[in-house]
Length: 264
Image 1: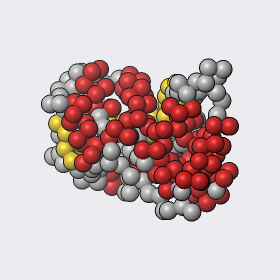
Image 2: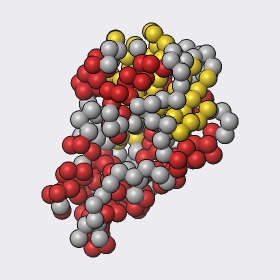
Image 3: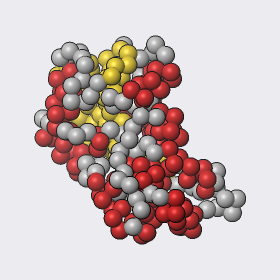
Image 4: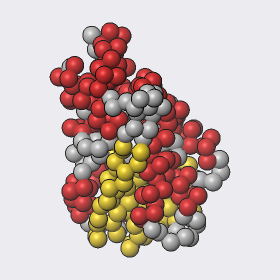
């Protein structure tokens, strides 16, 4: 029997083990593509445990950087990692705790698909950003080449047809280039464009791949932990059989993110 899974975002260490570590590889490539000059004022909306904020501090020489995040657990993890280098505030994308026209760049990493009201969040991004400023974001290619999650959901649906309703590739149509461009156009942003960012996601062993799903952070781990022990073990066995392991037991995968940038 299976309990009702839910998206859960509270435990920073479990999130880092699952997907935060991979976001930390996407963030520098995203910032290189964004190509903002030094001395800009930034806000990272939905900053999570601080992956994108860390990269901004290290690479972009910001004049100011604010991170906004609704999860208390994630904010605590970000504070521990970033100390006083970032102004971290608990808040939502639909009510960014900043004045009008107070930043030059609004960014968001792996967040847009989880926002309950994306148009409201984009309006807020426009409100806090100076005219002519930059909006940029990236999301996983859940339906395509975010392979660690794609393998998970393909195996889960093969065992339980009802699992398709929690599959991020189905749930999050915003995570496609045309949808990202459409959202920016609907918000009144100009000169929108997208690009693909691909990173390697190597796992030392099957357990290195599987254990992060037991942390319960995010849709796939929440689904895994909603299963009873027998069903979870069956999912584990099916994944082990399906994954492309090397002779030494390691597993090499690729994660693709879709990035978008536009002028506010």
